[in-house]
Image 1 (cartoon, rainbow, N blue to C red):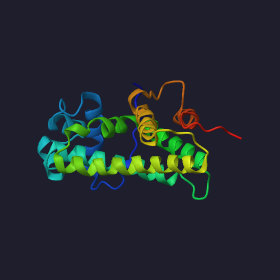
Image 2: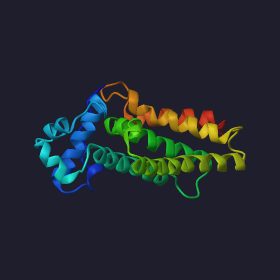
Image 3: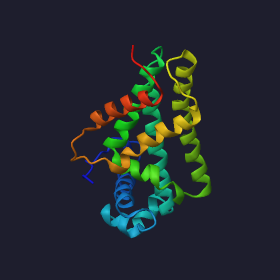
Length: 205
């Protein structure tokens, strides 16, 4: 995997600076070693802090994962919704949503891998909250596909299954994207937007 550039804007709401450094360090550690293989000492060391300092800001390692997961899911959901221009046709809305969603998973592939693939490590209450955000993401895409079916723009016999397939395709970008590869995040976004329109049976006039 190519290295992901350091990005601070996604953690802008995490304060103070020490808490932000711990989040950034945890993302890198979880992505590299996996949640269960990462220790609080690993995270604190990456942040240039003592293990005891971590507990000033986060009660447990799971709290750190929850903070990362909640912020990541909300950012991706906001991008997904914001990309859909009111009044545009379903094909344009779906393509724009997919393009934005994929681009985020490519640009933030290290964070996205943690956000999308470490859910099982969350505690019951935190897990339920994140699942709720994932349902909202599902509803955002499903709603556009339903609109396209109703208008006759899409030919989708199974809206629920197709929604799952679209989201799975987009999310998986975080697993394989290489910043040093041949395609940029924008190019991958464009490619996937076209693929998804084919999946829903859209034919350009």
